Image 1: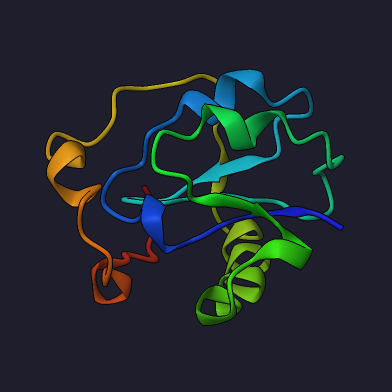
Image 2: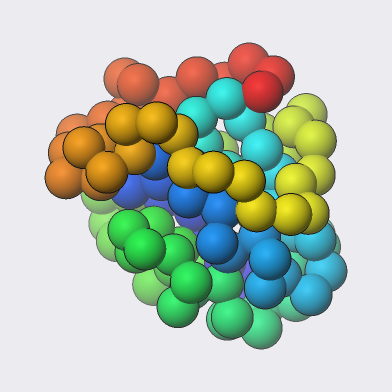
Length: 110
């Protein structure tokens, strides 16, 4: 099992979760974070740190977010690790209220 970052993170990219990860499993994209499944040790500490509740245990990912399991694995192979928190995106608070954000995901390098 691993943990998965889901749609709620898109265009917010709060990085509170990064500071508590004991194995530096987070990867950073332009407007989204992912978890490298092969590095995640299933410790669960990142879940409580996410202010938008975007992180789930793989078996608890909501049905409409299941594609984020493969997306995390795919993007983690190309994005660079993020090991320290940064400021959230400038309009993160406004985007935290939006629920349909898949079209906003940028998959290029940060």
